[in-house]
Image 1 (cartoon, rainbow, N blue to C red):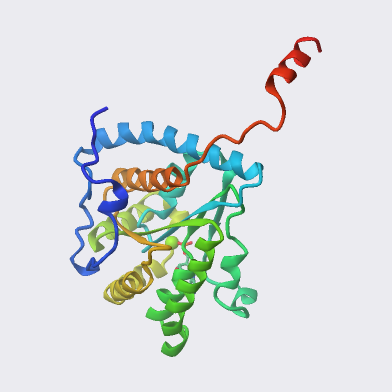
Image 2: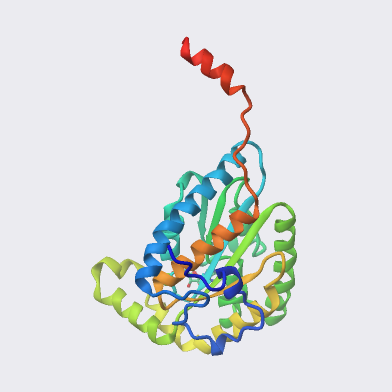
Length: 281
Ligand code: AMP
Ligand code: MG
């Protein structure tokens, strides 16, 4: 297979200095092929991802406490669910700790905003996936004044401290902000209204949220500027092309897992002895 990435996804998508308002949501940073090449490559790379994830899981079973956490953020219809289904769906579900964060429940509201997040952190050896996250508390909470400004302003530093501790404890964080255009969102919302198999994804409030698009863009800009750290970098993912988004996240996960230099756990028994025992059993 030809080398399709002219820049590795991890480098092509780094958030540093990026202006959300100037982002071309139909771009495919780092990738030089079209849809067909992308889909073929995705099939191949999904198998690589599955192999690496199995190694992480195997190490977890042998006491390795390291984990990987994919954080997905994006406006409605940006494709977070598609990443979970198509990218995470290609690995062994035993090794996945998945959590989706919606409007906080009554109980969750009584606690600090990180309380419900802590409960869902991946265990050693697991690939964690957050469909929305603690970042909602500096996005929707800010745009809709759910808390006073002095409260949400403090959260950026709190989040950075929280994530630094997580990283120090052995969790590799991959934070992906998915961006689609306002037009693309309209298309996708229309589909949800025209196809009975998509009604379940539609929420009438999603249409109202479109009126806050510039506020969300500003909130995303601040989030990227203030919480993209060496411990936990943000990746900005143009997501109009679903095939590209899925391929890029697959690559980000592969890069992260490769960075762990995982080996298969050594045998805790002597394989030759066991083979001899098996032969005569
Ligand atoms: P969905 O991901 O489509 O199921 O929608 C979940 C909804 O929950 C979105 O409208 C989010 O903005 C909302 N949500 C998630 N976290 C929070 C939060 N901390 N505070 C308020 N709303 C939230
Ligand atoms: Mg929704």
